Amino acid sequence: MPARSRRGWLPWVLLILGLGAMLILGLMSPWRLCVVEKERPETAALLHYLCEQYIVGASDSYAANGDLAQARDRLTELGEEDPASVVAELATSYIGTDEDVEATRRLITLAQALGAEDESMAEYLVATAPSPTPTETPIPTLVPTESPAPTETPTLVPTATNTPLPPAPPAPTATKAPTHPTAVPREWDRRLDYFGRTVRMEEAQASSGQWYWRLVRNTWQEECGGRHHIYVEVLDRSGNRSFGQTVVIEYGSVPHPEPYPQADKTGEEYAFNYPMNELLGAYNVYIAGDPSDKAYGLGLGTRADPYRKHHTCFLLTFRRTYQP
Image (cartoon, rainbow, N blue to C red; front, side, top):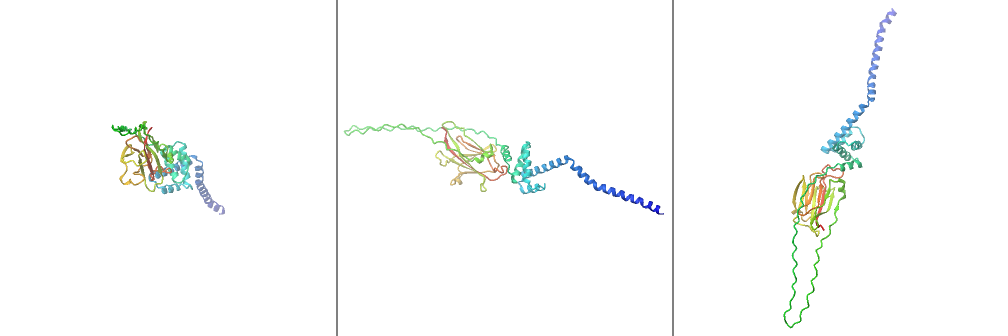
């Protein structure tokens, strides 16, 4: 009887041991999968690619809606302590590998908005800034005005009387040729050089002896108190306001002539103003009539964020000048 009892429970013992072994193998399987996962470098590369595309998507969204808080929240989902440095690092890598220009610019814009500062990113924005296509403006022909002929001074003829003859009149002195004031030096706001060829000036093509409109001052107000205008003052040869001129605002390759001065601005420092609604590179300004210097590429935007319509102002002064 005892031998039979042992043979009766032995199968149950073997069954329990088998189930335990299967349980142990089952518990070890996920660990083995994790090890295999870590041993696959292609998996890490895929995760890196997906993270990169996520950051690019965040920059595209910020460029479309300008919502910085939303972009920051999305980047926080990556678990990075400093999202600005992560975006800046990706933008710098795009610069070094000549990736898509517009995608690189959007990454740089988001990185700068988050507070990242890098000289290479700023230089890349300037180097890839779109330049307006200059249009040829016909040079008007100056019609010279005739100077009145000098009148001769009559010589007094004494009458035949016994009175003594009057003294002879003094000999006429030679009339000196008219002199013209020298050209006033130009004042150009050097901060505009930051935008390279986007904001620039083209000199008037005036021949010797012609009068032309010289751009003697171009001042940029990066902070304009909510205004967003081009202000223009036109001066005569003596530096006084020159009435009756025409200011030409050119945008979309089409000139828009405007009368100067505007009636409601005659008492202000700049008698003409024009509201800007487009980004840097949109507007060109010159004076109609005589040959004129031409300011190119005016518009909205700051040095830190040139691709958003931040309100700025341009203050231009043209003066009638003689070309020797």
